[in-house]
Picture 1 (tube, rainbow, N blue to C red):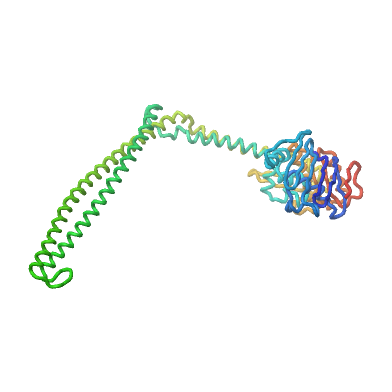
Picture 2: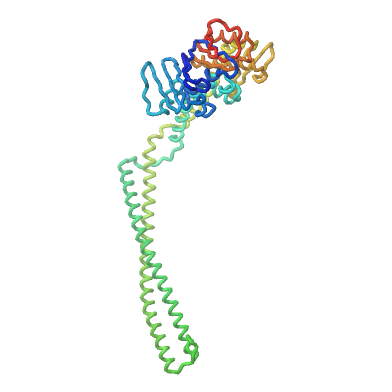
Length: 466
């Protein structure tokens, strides 16, 4: 990832068009507020990721409404403009993308996502991510991410095989003696569908009969209530000489006429009640008959379902080819993989030590990594026979150690190219700073640094004076 050139057009402090070229080592020099961070970091983060810690609308130069940044990286020309649009030219040919998201995915495949860029490509307190400050768990995850993923994939496959053996363990399987006939299973499946449909129809008919039965019971109850009312009226009329309704005295003829009317009504109700009782009894018998049919059909369906279960299980028993010993073997394999993973990572982490030590030797420290049996990582810094914690180092010492750490990880991952350092380098004395710059020259990295003062930079550094 080699940065060759950046062109700014109305981006922040750079109103109009401004072009900056970069060499293997480039120093952006200038006083506070002249745009060193903008030229060296902010423009690149915007061009590659559309990122800014401010609103994109506020990145325009004063008095302008549009801006763009163009980065020349390797064989790519990447132009991102606002309002947001991404244009990518590779080997002289513009690439065609359906939308900005597709173009961004392409850039992420080439340069990884912005968190990776900030963590490995920036040496900066504000815009970078210092993995040594993130905590032990996060640091360990970052360190082991590449190799750990490979072990996790292998472990996942072993776990899947172990689960399969547990499922199809013939030592614990329920064995049925049914002949494993697929055609018979199909017949049972068809029968279950037919029985289910028949049961559904029967239940619907039974519900209709039940509703009719409920209506008849209700009708019978109403007739009985009416009959009881007339009987009450008749009894009162016989017992008293007054009208049971209006309470007025009545003569014998009127009383007999009224009794006759009540008796006629009672006779009519008795006839209706007799008919309703007969219908209700017949409907109840029909309902009980359908309940019996549904019950017998459900028994038949349950029996068929049990046969289907046994037969389908019997057909699956051909897959029960593993035993308890096979499961123990997979468990042993997983334990062996975990043990080897810890051993491998312990040995691998040692390869970082000489690279980091080559950087931090200038401040008199050496580093070693310790990985215990549980896989927990400890970083031990030593100077003059005394051990130190990372947080006990001075600001400059921590920066040197961070640089060594990042470069070692990039080298171990087989990566090279751009590394950007902002004003954090100002905390280094000139001798240590020169040591760092010379170290970059000996390694496959391109250094872009922003400083407001570097009196005696070594030869070969390209200086951009702002």
